[in-house]
Length: 446
Image (cartoon, rainbow, N blue to C red; front, side):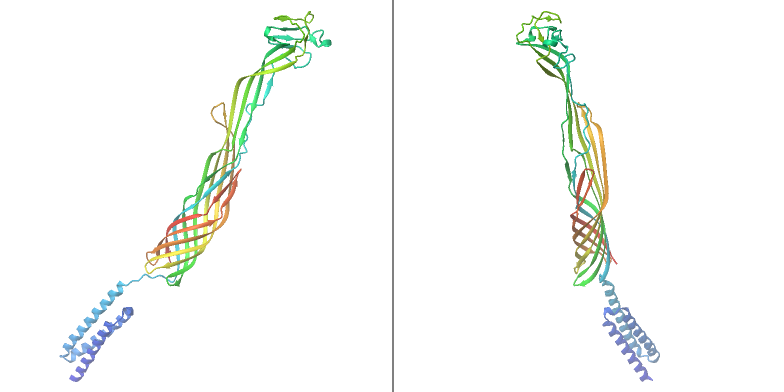
């Protein structure tokens, strides 16, 4: 009976030693399953130990030794659990989708407007040019009665046969100028209207500015090995672009009216006649030198009385508003370092939808004799549409992976796009959509 108890004690001691050895060399990667098996072995050893207690008193010392070995095994087990808790490597799936969003600044929107001449025309304010000779002097030719401020000349009985008359009068000596008798008359008026105008097209330009542009992206990256991953990339962006210009001028016109007082001078040929001293008044039957009934010449002397002016100019306002929706379809490649930093490059095609609205308004302004400006005419034009414009892009990015799901990045991109070319009214415009983009955003991987 003692031999059997001694054998049981020997077998129990051997089991303790085996369990202690297994726990001391247990690898971390084996996990909780192996640890659980070791615990089961220790439970069997405890059972054997209980049997040894009932059979052999001397086995107590061996039991103490076995308990000591069990404590050592538990200590080693706790040490391995601490190591497992501390090691949590950042995992990156080999095949993942990335949804990103952010905001960018696009340096695009160079607007060139060619403003054509207005269709508004300057009206006539002062009417047409006119001439009114002094009343009473009649036509320059013909045997008719003519009244002047300083005399008269009327046909007489001898006029039909001779073309001359004795029925005339004059007032002063200075009317006798050599071989001519000068008769003058006032009260005439001359109005001279000038309407010079110039018109020429003009243009304006608004330089490209940094426009705010939110964007969304979706990419599918597949691990290519050696830190590289690549796949398709889809990006949607929105940009609002606009420009306006006022007080453009294509027409300058003015109308000037000069009003003259007109004095008529009729010259009667007195060659060979000895005329009576003035003042002289003849009669149809008088005995006197016969004076020709028609003047030999007639002159008009103009003296400026007043001037009126009307100035005209157009004022044109133009504007353009564009909502630009960009859909980029391309491919990107990303390289990840051993740390959490990464860099990427991408390229592809761009489909731009330009939803635009353009307007032009013309006003014709009149200023008369330096007075207040007055709008006397206007015209308005409006045009809109949605144009599809193509392009391509090249993009680079750098970023940092926060955790398995989230990354942040900064990117720069350059677009080569078709320009928007349209017209409104008498104007046409060109919007350049090629330019640089800088952006920041965040990506979610799933």
